[in-house]
Image 1 (cartoon, rainbow, N blue to C red):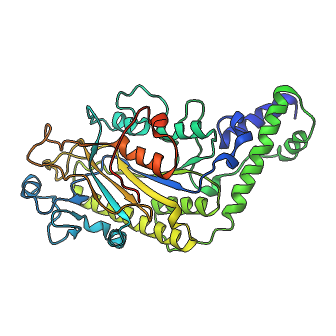
Image 2: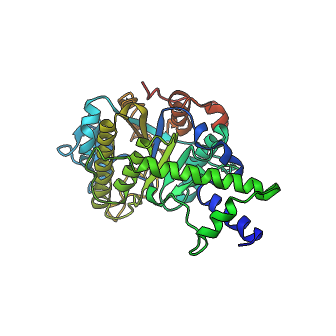
Image 3: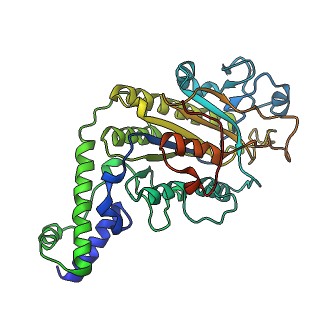
Length: 389
């Protein structure tokens, strides 16, 4: 292996887990903090009205004669609102004051495009001028490319920093360095040779990266599940997140997604199944955190890029809308309904009118949970409901 090959392999190996060698020397130790925010992305535009159901509102049933959640099926939360029955595994957290719903969440000049709207939520920039994500800016602020990770196949824009991408892992077991077959021995030998200049810099970064990766894998090996997770990719991702947190790897934000909420046709069957998958996975995750003694250190925040229109369409589904609901979950959460229910008789082009800017919800998580400066990360001062204790 010559010097050129060594540099090439070092850069490749470093890029596998970090993106930018310059940050590696300041890796995990700088992540700091003992609180973790878990972000759940419901991809496709989850229908908020059939998630948090206004079961006392006649306008809801008039607009949805075929797909509304019947009153008898609603999981009653108060005199006007109830949860979709698929969310039953979360009722115990509601009863314990650990589940909160945020009503009428959206952003100025709503965009019904999946791509554009998701980019707005990812960048926290409704003008769509920003090219980096709000979690990426957390990493830039902390100065640590290991402070957040996505569990999934591709890094969302939310985890894109100005100079690097945060790690995206299909599973935590894949968090390891893999070199081409037959070069491991030669690479290790050259890694031990004295270097200068660019090669010395990459050599140091590579050694640090290998140590960090080994530490993560060692910590992951100590995890013993505290709950029975349901089958499925989403639940597996949540368990991987629990493993990372239990491993004490110091990550501040962990991110994953549940897709297929784009319910233009046959909504009830599709959304019923998805919400059941969401709730079962989250219930197992919370139970695991309790058994690990970590429930006080983690809160979950869930969002979707937009809600759906109030009226059902001719295919027993709903089309792209504007404002919707978010949820927050955990011991640190102030349970309950935050905000007013949508006025279904005063719509904006057939959609509910948003009242709460989603950046105010983010600001709560940044300022009061992660203890990071929200104006610096969000590009302005935003206020929102006090959903944390």
